[in-house]
Structure formats: structure tokens, C-alpha cells
Image (cartoon, rainbow, N blue to C red):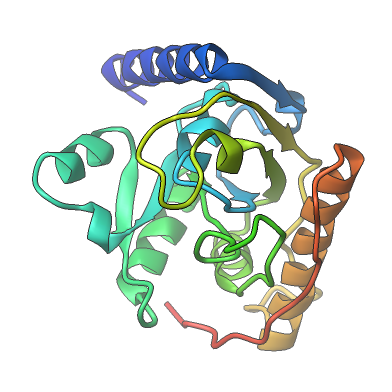
Length: 224
């Protein structure tokens, strides 16, 4: 990590926390559960476009974000790249994005991946795909389940302005991605790991009074 990247991260974190607090209140819980060094996959639920900066604002280390390719337009695209975002094609199996995420965490970086894929249409927890489990297992790094609460009130779906509200981010205890063997995990094993991650997110949400609807989804595994 270069000094320039660290200063950019610290400024961005301060700016986001300041904006969120001006909108009402911002609280992050469980930061000590995030490994200080080494590769890690952060797995938050997804309810608003504010989720990436809200998750990053509570972290003590820079992180990378997977973002839908439609966001990488002139001006905005280069800007979010500078703060660690990289594109993914959600219409199909984007092997390039998955390989990039694996390489980042193998290199010791933190990467935020939303297991639900897209934003929840009603704020409740949706079934999780296998991407988070796949990336973490291939790289041999832990997964930190993360609950995001309140961002959909500050920036609701379809809204173009921020509203007042309380944002809470809860970082759970890391979950090992290692399978029972040294070889790559099977689809069934990735599904079991995904179910554990989603259950952990639901538990964190329930502890803070958020609506939940735990579930699992059978998804196609993309082999890098």
C-alpha cells in the first residue's frame, strides 16, 4: 500500500463519515473482527447505492469494491476506480472480475463483495449467490459477514437526494472459507459456506432489529 493510497483512503473515510453523520447518525460495530492485514472478503447485504462507502467508512484499512459495469461511465467511472472499485458484468458469468477479485485477496487486499448480487427490492435479506464463497475459497482467505442497516432510508431506491436517517454497520466474526480438503471446494461445499455467511448476516441484522429473510440460492459456479 502506497502512502498516497492510504491518505486517499483516510480522507475518503473521514468525508463519508462526516456526510453520513450530517444526514443523521453513523455507527459502526465490530471493527476488531476485520483482520488488520492479509486478504479478506467482506460480505455485506445490499440495500442501497450507499452501501459501499458506508461499509468502507467503518474499516481501518483500504478496500476494493465490485461494482456493476454500468457505473463505469466517463468522469464517474475513473473516480470510483481511484477509490478501489472494479467492474463486473451482472448479466452473465464474469470470469475476469472474479479472477481479479481472487488475485486481489491473494495479494493481501480486502475486497467487498455483495453475496446477494444486486440491491434488495424491499430491504430484506435476499438469497446469496456463490461468488463470495468462490473467491474466498480459491484465495484461502476468511469472509467477514457484514450487516448494513439504514442506508436504504438515507438513499432509497430511485431517490436522487440524501435523506435523514441512522446508518449502522455491523462487522461479524470472520468465517473460514477452507473446505474439508486442500483441493478446490465443490459446488455443494460452496453452497454450504454461502448459507453460513447469509445466516451470519441475518443474525447480525436480527440483533439490531432489522428485517430479515434468510435463504439460499443454487447458482452456477464460475471456475476461474
